[in-house]
Image 1: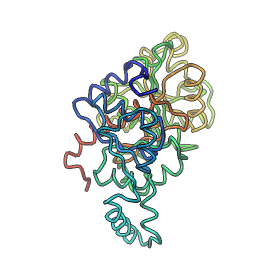
Image 2: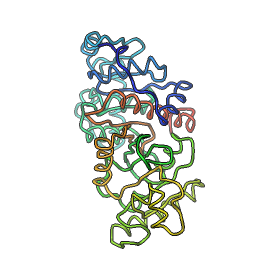
Image 3: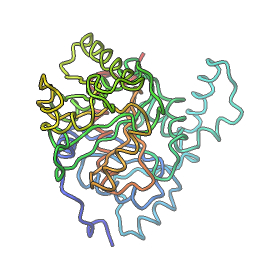
Image 4: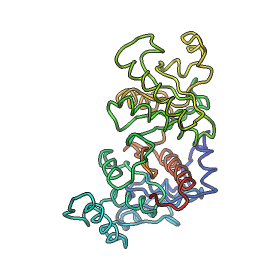
Length: 358
């Protein structure tokens, strides 16, 4: 079966916006595990759509042989082996210089930089790619380490965290536009009050960028406005107060509600019963979870039981856009995730037109 034989799903409310933006501003996205049938198929489709210039890392001969076997054209797809790349020596020198500044010595700079995640992160930091998609064959921890080590931190975010974008037009009460942004679904087991507040504000800004409208942010708990006061619910309530303060100081026009239960956040009828001041006049677009367990379990259930389409995880808190996808990722999800990363790269270029940060 060739790529032309595959029926790709039609664009949904989220991806329509992403694809339209990228047709005007195509971006270079590096895939760290290029020796994967799904990555090759997704790359060919992204080129066909004229929205992404894919860069595939891996053994060139293996990738090209697999493409031939699949009947997929690699035209306009850049295939690169980090071990043989012309920039490897340059990246090694940059690594050694950074490590000297940190007071450390690199024992094997070449071996370290030839690892796909490290090489891709260095490409990203120094402007040789606009975004990175990783994880289809790798463990999340190795991706996080590479990004934290090589990519500058976003001064506005508390730390690295992940956001999953989900689309489910067939489900009732699934955000105001049939899509939701969930955080933190992959990195921090028990976020602090400061973390939760930062995640809420930064994810709200992210959702506005992707949706093109002001989102409603819900900070979730088992309690709604003090209905079940526990240490956990009080922590979320404190985070909501801090998040609203942060949003106000940044002059952001976003509604942040919390602590509230999931049905109050999403179901307008439940909100009318439980919230007397009718704050729930609009379904939430952003869901901030109190811990990693609740976030991860929720998005997996929405995907595998309710049939919601998943894109991401987008890895936020860095000055360059990147995503970590699951090992079970589909071709369609790879395409959408690459588009998310690409549109984030458009925002980066608008904020930093010269590319490099001071």
